[in-house]
Length: 437
Image 1 (tube, rainbow, N blue to C red):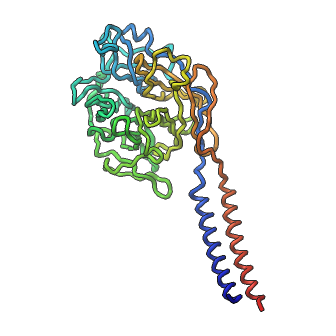
Image 2: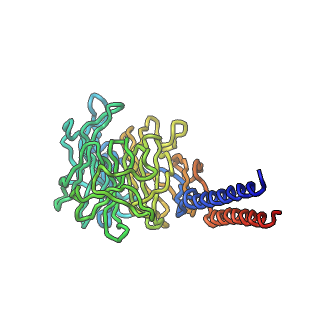
Image 3: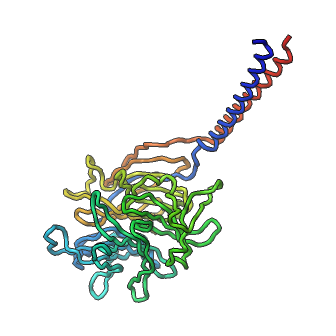
């Protein structure tokens, strides 16, 4: 090959290489670099606080209740429980007798285990929700999430068409109830079986343009669904046609919506979870919206966070409040098990806003307990910690994925260096051409 041809070939290669290196460098800056922000981590906990089914429940004939959905009513906090069981002899199949579809306790803010009281009506425990107990229609009606709008409590509930297990599965649908002046709740609307709103957790916030809205995380098939996001204007909360469903984000990170439920897309990063009961709230001290649920595909509890109510969400931080098969916390008595639920308590974040209080339920002995975790913050990217429960105040966390601290400045500098090298090589090639014999 002649020198001129060699130089031409070399020049073409250098130009192509420089262009490719530049493109790769730019992509590394915009794609590989994770989005930095205030990252939440579990510092200590989860730690057992108290069993909510104590002597005060027994005094009303309550032997156990599950769930414990939280809602702020003025200056007080309600915890709304699901199926409520008595203290007397149960059915021949075992367990405690069913005596109510729901029940509730009330506490000043922040929540205090020693001073809460059970809501009563006519000398009996108060039932905000009732169930027809009809197979195929309404075997149970239990709370899933609640919010106060203009002084009235709205309860998103799961109405069970059929309780199942294994391959048979449970089938349910969502129903929205509104509080009336006399303290009873009336149905506003409902959604189809096994579609969105089977489990729903709402929070009040604003759209990007400042419009007040109720945002909600929601799931479809019971404990076998990704997590979706929707919003509705408060005055239109009772009309399903006015709900908007997240479909993704535009190039600026703004949320995209559709009014068609069928067009809803799972929250990015939560497409493959099997979410159980959902909890969603805002912690002002952390400037974070927190999302918590049990993932039935991994059998862990997951905590996600975002600085907006519409995401995207960072996480998960995984933890096991009831311990594991090989490591049970001291508060878990012999024979206790079947950990589920998980509802965070608004307005109960400790002096600096870093204490997260939440309740969880145990199928055995059919009770609900209060727990807490200490959260810390730092300017890092996504991490996943695996935490097990304790009844003391200290615990270690192991990071299992994504503990990367990329510096945008460093990557940009690298891009400039690579581009500069390419330009230098091309210039050298031109000089070589001018000096050839």
